[in-house]
Image 1: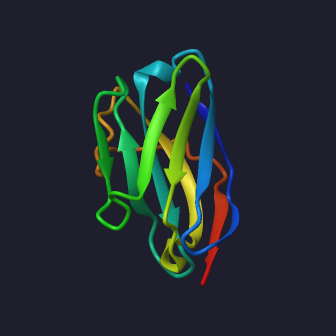
Image 2: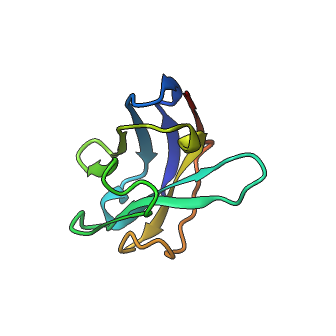
Length: 123
């Protein structure tokens, strides 16, 4: 089992950076692939980035590739999303989810969603 809590969101100007964190409870965190998703008002929740349970594979949505980076620290039960060169269209609530023994793929069945953290990028 794993429970997730997102943090690190806030207000930032276009071109700036934020680092989101996802803190996980549970003794088997290292066996879960982790994914970051985001949802803007009136839109569906979209995949942003994923990392396999082993940490060996990473995937990114086209909209964020080259700007965002996902990483994990299994010793601390943490997953990060480093967000650089932020744009107003990145504004959304960001969520993390987990998939047991997943590969971090966009279509993995992530679950155990946290409460989300708001990211707002001003122009």
